Image (cartoon, rainbow, N blue to C red; front, side, top):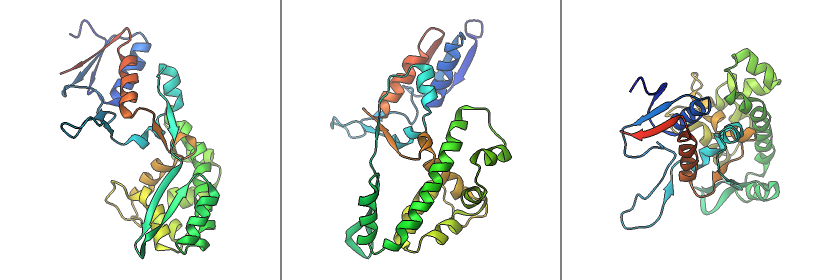
Length: 250
């Protein structure tokens, strides 16, 4: 086998298929090994309910972290759609109402007022205006050689913003800007998913998780793949199967 291929990629998830596609594009003969009966890893559309013809996607909003450069480089036939509603959170004090955050500033502002948090709208807007500026600076580096911390801070060009989102625990920033526990909870969600960490964790694990959730596409807005994550998988697999690559489940 070693004499017939140039590179062996172990694992057939979306990152492995991307690597295989780039290697094949560079003229290398690539073999992808996957222990499951299919490739794709988390980037699949599955049928989890026997007898029900419904295909569900895992983590579909994370497609926002797919750089456009990769789509263009590999000629991926994928279509993304903007998700206009970021979140809708019921108010524990009154489940008949909730905080609705959308791409429409007016709708979002009125929703803040309905849950008694009108005073927090300015702080919320300031927080996410900052993340938008940071996203524009940081997201392009995902397809560049890894910058040093100092280089990335210089690229952001705003020491106060860097300190509030990178250097200090996320709890400090959220608490300083927002008063409502409901609004604080919605803002904190992006820093807590999957981390098992506290917002005031000095290791800043919540900050890292938060930043991944707010830099997608260079804007922080969330997209979803038209047709589900399986369409992303299919496009990557086709790119990896072009001359030079041979994905094989094992």
